[in-house]
Image 1: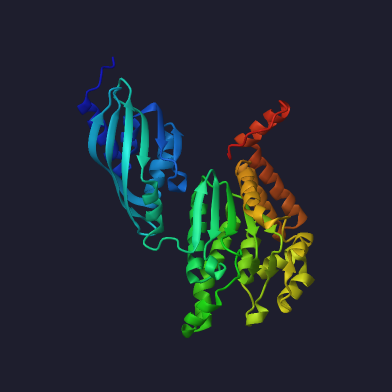
Image 2: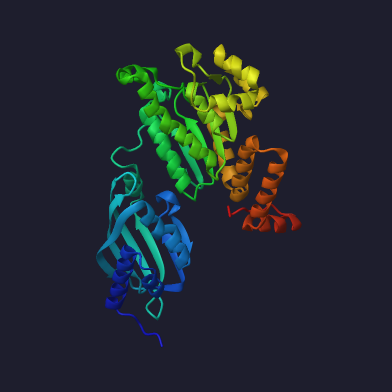
Length: 403
């Protein structure tokens, strides 16, 4: 028979919870948490950790184990107070560091715990300094050339060197790779939006930076700079989320890679696309020699590269480099709306579509038909597909969960 719990019993249970989390002790957690446990983690936490997690397994997988994967940290309880309704309020600090960046984590927290009559925890509401968690992931070298955020399933990558028209230097290349890795590790991301602040998406490589760093030899400089840049594109090509790019002003050189990386491209009126490599005696990077012939045809791509011929936004639309042209003052809103629309779609189906389209270049028809069968079987067992079939039969619009 259950009895009313004393304050000391609740405090002891909370302390055992923090000890179990520090050790990753699954058996202890199973004893401490009720079967109908529900956790509420602070909205705005990185890596998709925020939100409501229903059940002990969901709380472990989506919050606690994800913290352990990306951080070496523990919750240090500092004070315990009981509320009139019997809940226990725990205040303290998460202390530790991010595993990849080494950035120090010191984030205040408030936990509000509810208990059942048998002394098990039935709910935990977490409040914490979410900015401190993001800062720890970024480490001492916080993102300086890219604005990055994840909101409502959309990861936004905004190139942010407006005074340099978002010219790409080593730091931007490195930060682009860091952002790509974060996106790949964050299951809450269901769409990606690439954009740029200031007068242009990007004018490509930063010539001033090249001149400053050329003392080591341009070949070494380019190797250090292009490797993370290309690695980021490779990662983004394999993520599950579809990618939207918003192009405006000049899109030049290796910066055209941001357009190639996207599945859908919205361009502002007046946008110009220029490979630009012939003008500076380089052969090109950013994936252009792979993507551009496939998008606009080999002859047009050769002219763009060899003669440094700009591609107008009207030509880009006609030839298939972009999907849509909008007035400049509508670009951001239109691209953001498209990204949100995709984020509300069938994520597993989108991921499979991306893979099929990507791999079709290396398959013959027989191989591609077999891949489509495998893909349809994979997506056919998702909750999204089942829900969509039911919605179709009931003549209503389906709601996709992304699984």
